[in-house]
Image (cartoon, rainbow, N blue to C red; front, side, top):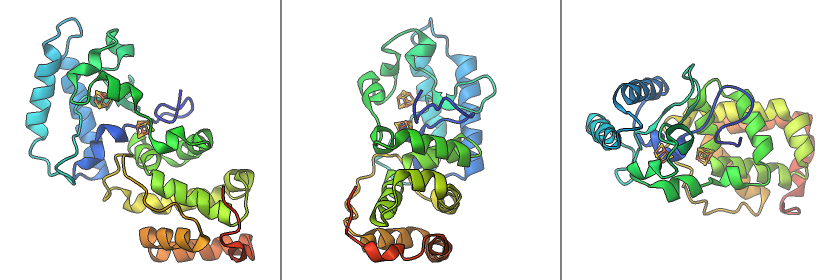
Length: 246
Ligand code: SF4
Ligand code: SF4
């Protein structure tokens, strides 16, 4: 199991399959995934190969009228619910379901890309700790996907703690409630973003000031509010800017 499909909880991620490129509300994402899953179960027969492209074409036509955030980003209709209770999202044509190692070749990206891709947070050194935290915060797989795919924000938070000379033990344990609050604030605006996890981070946050500039631009006044509370718990932490790099 991994950040994509955590062992714990009842959530999973599907952000890199392009879901959030569609301009929908959180509720509408859930409805769309349910609609895809029901249609997939009714129309796709793993032993009939042409049922895969027929499903894909049909969904692409139906979803063609949904406005996109970026016309160049593809949203794969094979992303749906993959468990009986319809809580976990994932690839409905993954080889573990179809028994065919190449079944993802029916998709736009193809097997080699689908199986080789790992996002920045998943391949990062703190992946397991982020996974645990995001499972705890997310109320469903949509929220979990928002959190998991948001690698620039996550990296900025890591750097904020590193520049404040606080180690990962402090960050994920002693400051856990504050960390959870920060990501809950982030979730309030996540739906308006097009998180694919492919976003390029142009800022490596060499100083505390650069991290704070980024967090302030992303969270607005809520960042100042959060920082005020955080400083009460961690006095004088702003004085070590730039002296430590992870
Ligand atoms: S965005 Fe990352 S965590 Fe989410 S499904 Fe893709 S690789 Fe996995
Ligand atoms: S076929 Fe690839 S892009 Fe489509 S849902 Fe599966 S893993 Fe994602």
